[in-house]
Length: 124
Image 1 (cartoon, one colour):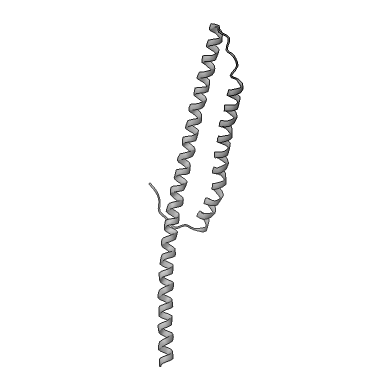
Image 2 (cartoon, one colour; image 1 turned 45 degrees about the horizontal axis):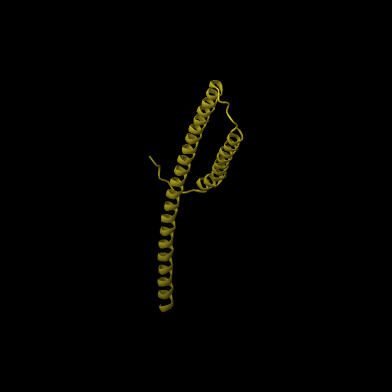
């Protein structure tokens, strides 16, 4: 459930402060994946054609699959967090736009009223 509220300076400050942390987290995750892939490519040595060598290769591949699964889960969590924050930003921006529209209407009404009063005073 999303709680609707107006964007305050504190909310804006929070949004601006958390955005770099999310970007850093995403960058670290990308670097981790790239480093792991480069390590895996370095490990692609010839596997001896023995039962023990094949068992070691199977264990290495299973470990790599587990690491990939864990990485996928981390990526999904990061994407979910980004989606939630984007949703919150969109909602906050929508509320801010509504506020600006209301203030614009009030300003136009105040301007029209002041012009009418000015014209009335000049004509009397």
